[in-house]
Image 1 (cartoon, rainbow, N blue to C red):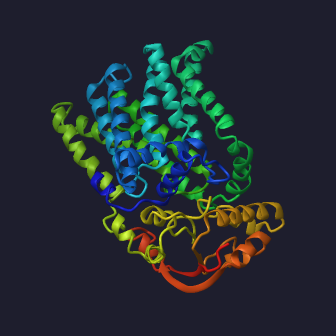
Image 2: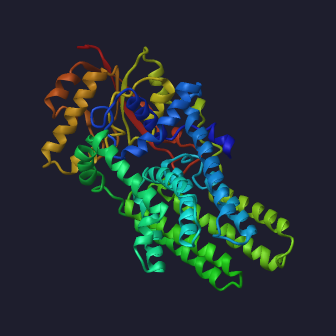
Image 3: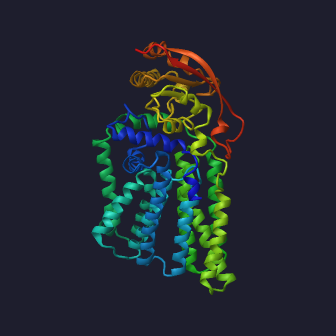
Length: 498
């Protein structure tokens, strides 16, 4: 499974955010160099991945998988230390199973495509952070300075996706309820470390990335949150029902109390994670990584408890663990089967879009408009050619088309596109003509861009060259999108550069 991660093609988030990391390290800024709705930590986490490429010479397409593997090992090391040093679980066998379940969840639950996604990092961070918090609630004393430092860095990593801060907040509320006093909560190293990370991040936002709260966040509230999935609740209900089914099943089984507590805690974490998935409202698969991972861990613990209690009668602990491992691996492969047919790095370079860029004399800055951002930025990474845009896909376009009365927003983003075309002077404009955007079938982006005077002048330098026939399935073989979905691109060539 891990070996395959180094073989399959990058997903579009990895490709785009590696491009952003490069621009950021070159002095790029929000708005002018990347108009990205995600907050800064989502970008910063890709800087060390880019350094693996620039400092160690590792091919850029391998760095997300390698960084994800390193992250798993570091998180597993932290968890192993906490399981050995704290008093959260007195049963060493349970601790061992939890560690194995965590490793398997970290390796398998993201799936091939979303391995090393930001939600993957958040899950890997949450487990040791929450375990340490629970240990403090139970009276365990860490070295104050080391604990504050650990929670500070853990807090920054959780801020990759800030809404996951709900998890430690719930632990604090539970501690307040348990202790019936608020000052011990404020004095605890986890509260101080996590609070310091939030304050530090706020200062970073205000001083280093002021464009994000000033400009990007306004569009995020207007556009991004205005385009939520309308069919996400049935998925949330399905996941939540399964969580409740696991808890109910475990409740009626005569397994040890500490096993019950571990299962209940993991299922509760899963429910919270799925609730956050629902709140995000986008129905993206990678938003379920944390929920599925916690749920998988609960199922592994439940399976082991049943085998240990009823099959081996609390004897032959090693055999029970081995049987559980076999079942857990089988379950992991069933839930997240390897995508054997997904394009590899080399196969991605044989796709029609890749060949189109290959035929263009280098350097070949280019602009691609397609169904969404899914198949655009991999082309830029693999070809080494610049994608001539600050946008991770035109994420503002559907809103602008649907709300034609918002002239200011439309002209603002068309002006930004004009700036990008002037700056990068793309040699190729590759424009999909049979896409539905803003509810309009066969949306004509060229005509839409010409509503802006600056863009109309720039586009007059381009001539239609040919139509490229492509198919979405070429980029998603072996997945649910491996169905016939023709895409027609009009290719325009820059013939009259300024």
